[in-house]
Image 1: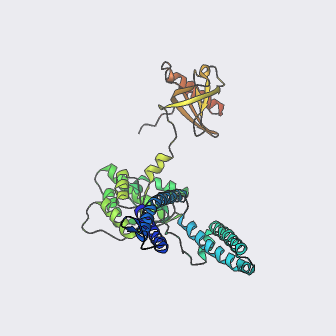
Image 2: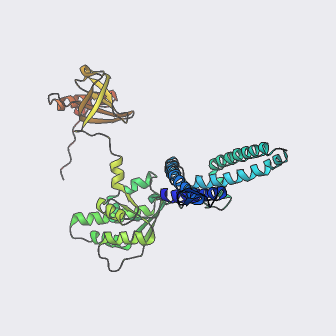
Image 3: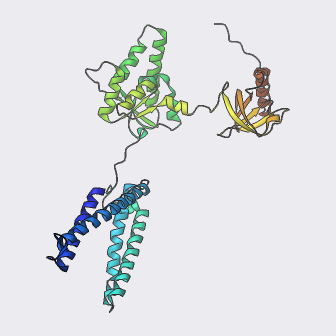
Length: 385
């Protein structure tokens, strides 16, 4: 772009120099064999080469700055702003044209330009703020980029792992999964094969999967449909599911992480219940080491109290004398209460007394909630079979 702009500026100034040299004295020799026309052409070309480079570089900088500023502005806003700008300019020109009746042009032109610029700017800002309404005047989807439907909004193809696991029932009943669920013939055949297997474990898994699908048919939040379709020439069930999802434009509901990765690479939108379970797991668990800033003393002797990023209280044994310090805490137990989670632990650089300390902490937390401690609960024995 820089060279193109420089070439255009060189041509312009060369033409201007040619006109100036011709108008002065085209036949008079100025520099030896060069006459006035040639000198004007050379000087104009040189001046145009220098100014063209400056103008080209400045234009490139302005274009890059404009691109950076408009990076976060949607295309719909730009289209609506352009429509508002044109409308404002036309309205301003229609309102301001009587100023040309003024006797002096140096008064009429600035006033006309001021009104047109102000109304054009106001029109663009108003149109951008009312983007959807402005674009709707030209059609329901005019000027709008096509929206990609989310995986949860598409019909979901149910994998065998989901049917066998059964947690899909809790997800549906909690309202996080709704719409149409599709069970293809390959999945039903695989479940039937498991239910008819000689091994007791495989047979129980197959029967549980069929029972879960039967229960899903009675749930009000979803519509379960058996999909009578197969993929000839493909023998693996996972490959068939990926092919069906691509052909029918559905998402894949699975618990198999490897299948989820393969399907995503093939372009299928995936709902991975295993990823959902990992996202909802507690922030810390017994045995983890977490950094905690101890802010205040606890109720029991020697305890220090800090908080995790999610607001969970951390009670640290032998932490009272390390207040206002960032301490690495070894978690011994996590107690879930009506008011949130309580995390108990001790500093990792302390002697390994965590077992007894953790037991006393859990007992103290349980008694604070009005429940018997684990050591006070009567033991239960399973009846002999």
